[in-house]
Amino acid sequence: MGLPIGTVVVAAAGTAEQVVASGNAVSAVSFKARLANAGAVYVGDDAVVAATGFELQPGDEITLSFREAVDLRRFYVDAANNNDSLDYAGVSS
Image: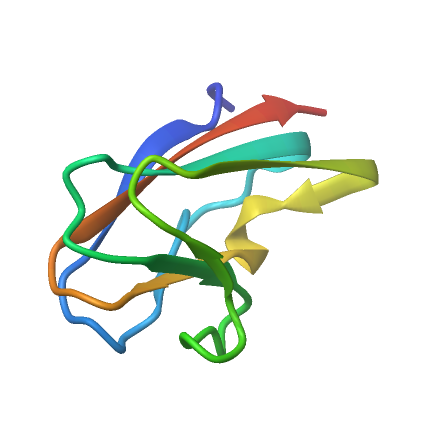
């Protein structure tokens, strides 16, 4: 299993995109909204929308640390605008 680093592009605003399709257990993960985004992106679970997700404006970043390993497949991203992106980097367990 490789180091979980990548980018999620939300092709259609209002449609949640899974961060990764195959399992990557991590003890921490950082999410950063791309500076070039037209608006906010939202991080959450498979039901993420603007009203329920953690909002990241262009350039914003959040790092989450976990006591026990968490599978990156649990995270999804949505966006206010088509084709906005979110970078992620995880620390493998």
